[in-house]
Length: 292
Image (cartoon, rainbow, N blue to C red; front, side):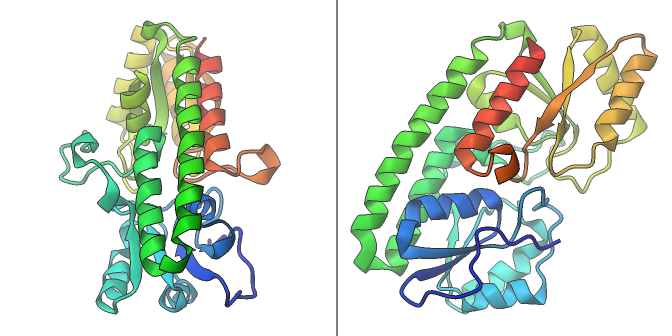
């Protein structure tokens, strides 16, 4: 399950060695670090960070890196002990959670005490994450501060453009059609930022299974609101959404599968979605075009 992306088997001793957990963070560090860093991503496209368990090889990579970057907010839920051990060893660890405006964090709708970790779907929050990465890289490598700051400024400008693109795109849908039904509850930050009602069949973690009662309730919701399309996710098995589609059909309403969304990982080169910006544009286009 270890899909190392954007890695080089040869370490460049002139560059800051960074290990990032998710594909989103690998891309973020590459944008801020530029040619001053060498980034080793633990998870490849389609890998679910909720369920990811670090191998002995992964732990070694993190122990020998100059900097380790992770999301926090319990996204990498099975790696908590690893991060704790790295902190105790005095490792430079960048935790995106630390740079976020806590008043914008969403709680799980199942009354869990855990916050929703999918903050990258609100571009304004990802800007905060970018600033936290730049801050951490500067602390670890102060001689290249000017480069990191220049790269940050450029990337923040690109994120402002992305945010505006998404704002404009969703305006193509009337308010009553902005209902997003997905496999698990990953898109609530998207809903909060871009004015969508978001309903996930599973909770914020893919570890929880959807029950028949959940399926029936959501099928009734789809029929009531005449929702044209529901969506599968790249890092979640399609069986739950296919079962939901069947349950809705049994009630006399045909809902189509509107396409595949990238939820807990970026896309890939094959689909021209290997960057954060391309992935969020693709998601927004897929959602809006299917619900029109």
